[in-house]
Amino acid sequence: MATSQEEAGGSLRGIKSRSPREEALRRFLASKSALVGLAIFLIMILVAILAPVLARYNPDIQFRNGLTATGSPLPPSGRFWLGTDPLGRDLYSRLVYGARTSMEVAILANIISTIIGVVIGAVAGFFGGIVDTLLMRFTDVMMSFPVLLFAAFLSVALKPGLKVVIFVIGFVSWFYLARIVRGEILSVKNRDYVDAARSIGVSRFRILIRHLLPQVYGQIIVYVTLGFSTTVLYEAILSFLGIGVQPPTPSWGNLISDGDQYLTSAPWIAVFPGIAVAITVLGLNLLGDGLRDALDPRK
Image (cartoon, rainbow, N blue to C red; front, side, top):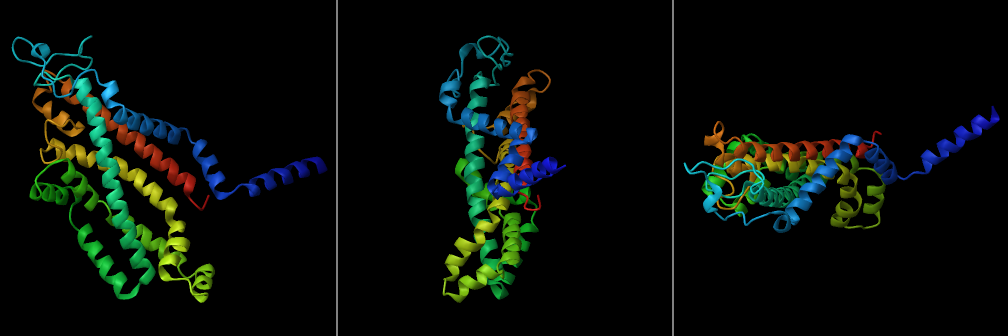
């Protein structure tokens, strides 16, 4: 009996001795779905980085023998692994380079939205009063617009292109993060350690950066990870509609658009980019869910 109590006490001491980061890492590594999502995300990043090495051909080259005698795209074969597109270009090479475009948009647009959302949410939550009211009413107004419709309007108004798509998606994706950060700042800004910092003359900026924002890092990481999947979808939709990344730059959205008229005669043109989008979004959602569960302070 005593031995079992000692073992139980030892196991409890082992659990208590873990830091919050170690415990979060343990929970994350214990989630198979999260690890699958992480693997998919890392693979997509590697494909984007190594696109010139992985691609078999220049994605913009139109092959003379890339079309049939009747001008139709070629199906998958030993030379063209995923077939060719309506212009006789190698679809596999364009798909690989499309991963680079999608990851570039996802990363840079999320950086923009994260900066805007964190700054607005943190300032509104920390200063409160009229500052909070004005910033949150502005956020409410922005949230009232349908995101995709708003993004489409901005993309058309600013002339579609890669840089415009990155800016537009980043600008329409910060609203919910701002509210999350504001709520977390409001919940911790009146705690004892913050009052102690104020009493010894620590500046407001230092209190915000050193004492308050570290409390919301977990929520920011989860939101950004889940935001990757949304960004990939937004880019694909805008490019599919012709108001996103413009040809000849390959992106998964305009690759699907290229195959829109060939769904019955050459379905591979739209199917393979669609599968790439679906796998990427699924992986990022699994990764985001795993991070959310691992970083949940209630656990």
